[in-house]
Image (cartoon, rainbow, N blue to C red; front, side, top):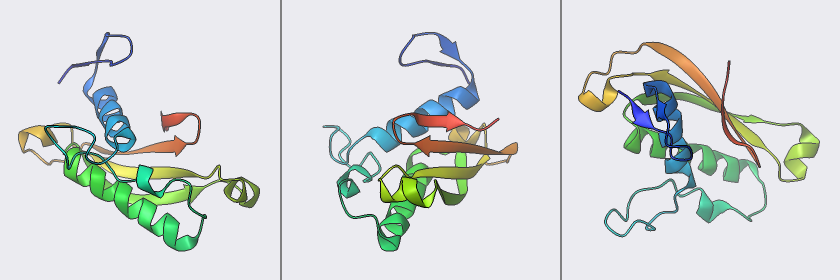
Length: 130
């Protein structure tokens, strides 16, 4: 499947389209799309709260659930908190996500091609791991 990059308009491959989709899902606030109020991740509603273990657990669950609901090409395996203690205290913690990549998942074929990893970093957004 080919798609268009939402910033440049250039054609991108299926994996890049998957990453772009995750970025859109996680950056969309719940009920902000008029015709699809349930779309989004719910992570925006947690921003600005004190960073606690229970907040991170909720954050991880919201991200995993949103990806499972809205991106059939991915099946989340795990989400890991990244960053040093100082970065976490300063509110600059990131997340590393590991998922099964199913390139034809949107067509109902959930065969796993490979395991992929990507990171969510404050100020940098989604970055694919090499």
